[in-house]
Each structure stands twice: as structure tokens, then as C-alpha cells.
Image (cartoon, rainbow, N blue to C red; front, side):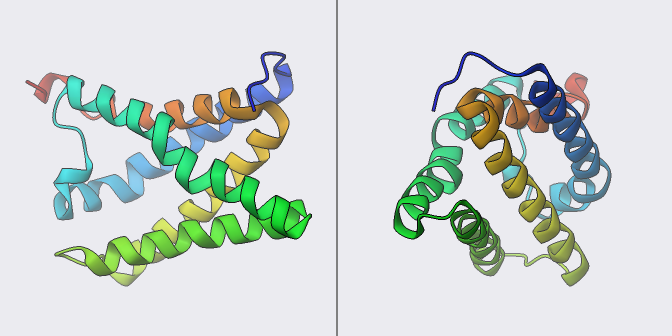
Length: 155
């Protein structure tokens, strides 16, 4: 799980993918989603740090690492395990949307599903290439978009 011998190519791939997905989220998803569900976005630097630690410590563990590890043992196939792990992430998006007090419009939901699938595929790819540290770097870059959202407006 923890590999400290990271390949420079995989690190560069994770960096590029994280920055591109962060840019897509920042430009297309966040402006609309921030208005609909402001509680999903940090309102202070302390809250951002807490969200980052929670995501790195628990969210990835329960949505990527544990399901993938369990499914790979169950099916003995990386492809099947990856497909079901990503399907689990898609189901979570639908459950969150259904339980939300303001459901997302269909085009935004579709965009979010595409980005969920892409980030799930990339997380599994980076996990297989560089372990947890590479996935955490990728996730940290995704969270970096919140720093660009006007740090000056935080208390």
C-alpha cells in the first residue's frame, strides 16, 4: 500500500491529472454546486484542512482502497474490481443527489458522474502504480482548487 519508491513518470501523470481535474471542477462544477450545496465547500482555512485530512484518511479508504482490495480478492481480476469500485462511487453520487434537499440539474449530475468515473479510474490507476501516496497526492491537487476560490473571503 505504501510505496516510497515512486516513479517520476507516474508522479508527473498524477500531477497533471490532478491539476486538469481540479481545473475542470473549478470551472464547471464548483460554481453551480457551491450555490446549491454550500456545506460541501470549505468556508475557512481550518475547515479546508479538516476536509483534506478526512478525505485522505477516510473517504479514499472507504470509497476506493477498501472496496478495490475486497473486490480484487473476490473476483481475482483487476478490471472487474476496478469496474465495481467505480460503480460503487457512481452509486454514492446518486444516493447523495437523491438525499440532497436540492437535487442537481441533469446536465450537472451527468458532468459530476463523468468526473467521478474519471477520478475513480485515475485513483485506481495511481494506486496500482504508486500506492496510497500517489493517490493522496492526486487528491491533494484536487483539493487545491479550494485555495484558488478566494482565500481572502475566508475568516
